[in-house]
Length: 215
Length: 315
Image (cartoon, rainbow over all chains, first blue to last red; front, side, top):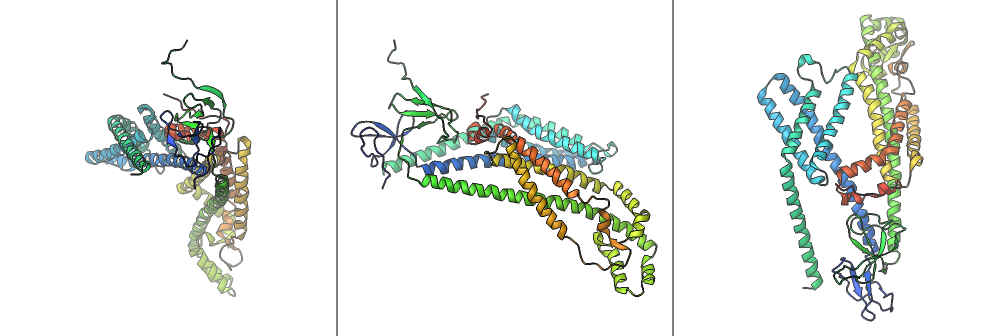
């Protein structure tokens, strides 16, 4: 049995009347058949409670997910720059260098694509700033550690070849060019996402209409 | 004089005083204008974030179950926070104690290694067998421990006083892993505390300002209680050494202070305090940076917890 819904003007119970979305605001309205008074049909408070919980949890998870993915990609990028790329430079092996640089460009491209889709409200230079800031913080920490440890583990002495931190900084700066170049792809991806998402919602609306009509 | 084409005007009748979340995006509509709309003469409120309209004349609510479920959710949340505090306290205690003991073990293994080389080069095994002919079991255990027990090995106290301590100190000064371990411990432990603080500041929007310091207080009490209990119970394997020999780890405690775990716990709590005090600002910055405005509005409680209002800064 539906919950009682009494007209605040004439006292008629409107529970049996179907609430229809109005054309102006999309509110679920019921018009009293006796006094023509229009009332809003309340949403189920349990559903409202559940929805608010779900929305908050989803936002928090999205935030954490973005952080983890972004940090993961930045750490991967830094690890490749510090070890294999520095080693390739020290060996003076052009082919190895090219292979690693291409791999890093792909990684930076994926990071740029991800940031572009995940943070569409940010402009290109802001997204590039986020990526560079993560590397700048990492570089600063690594530099302090290297200094305090007398460069024992990172081997930052110039005798053996380029400093890994300089290679990392150079790679991070170079990744800016990749971020600029992937911007058209990001825009394409965003457009595809929008079309896909609206398509899904259209389908949902159509289903809801069919269910309402009782066909 | 107005023409027929003029759109009907909404009249402001007041403003929302309590908490009321937007049904679409979850934004708190507190402080928004209540409007009398011209089409149906209904009272409505508009969400400033997603622009959706919500009616305010709502009849009826579905009894008491919503409130009951709200209590259940609040209870589950409180339990979750309590469990998180418990885990944080125990983890903090375990991490600081394990790190301090790792320092001791590292130093003790250096003590044992330096002592072993002296023991073998001066043939102390023969000296021991000749000195204690009636205590062969203790002599065998002492010699065996010198070679195999690592940080729990037997160490000659006389050697330690005569120059062993100095040689261990020199070896430690040369050791990069030892420096690395100290450096990592002294930076990662406060950093871990700060991250915990950020998480707790986001989980406890009801606490503001210095009240947030109740979190490091509780975590510190739990961690200290657990660490002290373990510290007292941790005596190592039973040993029957000859006179003049003690465990390497007890000599290592002359180099590594006994209270090193307390120093580490103090550092962790400093990090935690800083984390809880500035945590919400950091999370707010990250939310603005990484989440689109509509999604970010759902986390508006992070602003409301500090008496602010989330507003999307339009580009």
